Length: 91
Image 1 (cartoon, one colour):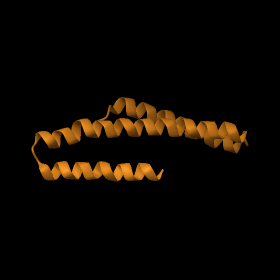
Image 2: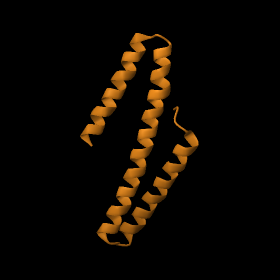
Image 3: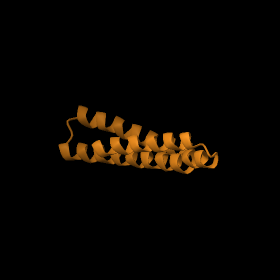
């Protein structure tokens, strides 16, 4: 993975903490809107992580394929991104 690993791990650990908090909130029958707000906060961080990972993929992996003059690898990298875009559009 080419994204900033320390930054990514820090964000993932934040989400893990939020998920643990959500579990406690549900166990304690917290107000629905409070739970929903925490869910949205977790989703927001995960979306941000995904964006950074995909940007790193484009900036490093695709760029490397282009520099290696490997048309088949470039096509494969583009197809990978297209599949991710398709998945994102289904969310």
